[in-house]
Length: 239
Image 1: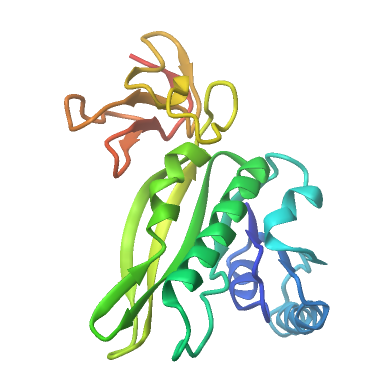
Image 2: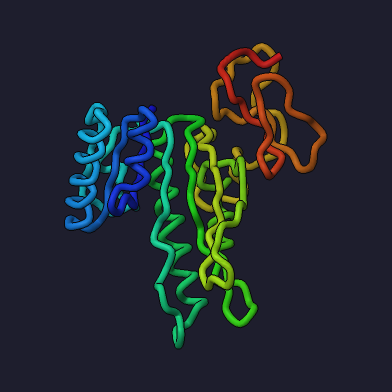
């Protein structure tokens, strides 16, 4: 299993994945941070007698596909840049717009390196200021257009009275007819209905049925996303 963290920081997520027997790939835009991550992973492999199955590079999180082979990653697990630590006196709406642009750019690029059915586990920020909540809603709303199905989320994690809360999502990359749509509301892949019929082959991540509501329910070898899309979880023929 190959795990990628495009915001690897000091390598905490990579170290956990390495200890779980995964091959890990990490990147960050800071060369200094990547150097520290490399030292940490070297220590982990030596201390716990692990195979040094890791690769690190310096690159922007929105351009990892320029450094990795397409469809080479099983899962992306990351906590991206969540915004400034202090927001007093700053325009929170502009901050959220900037974060939305960053995350959408990342998800668009990551889809190229993920295998069909690959997962993205990501923390998204929710700011709570003067009892008002600010969230990167456009990111969640854009998932289907970007080529993902929301499998799980939001799962909230935060300290009491925290200004920035983390909302965790698990996304699954799916194959879309004609590639990833780019804002085309009439895209074939967005239309409702059966996408794979009986006796046709399906692979993990393939959309079998796109629907509103639960007219159809998942059976063996399939599951249902938050938007009621039914997708394959194993390879085989549709019954």
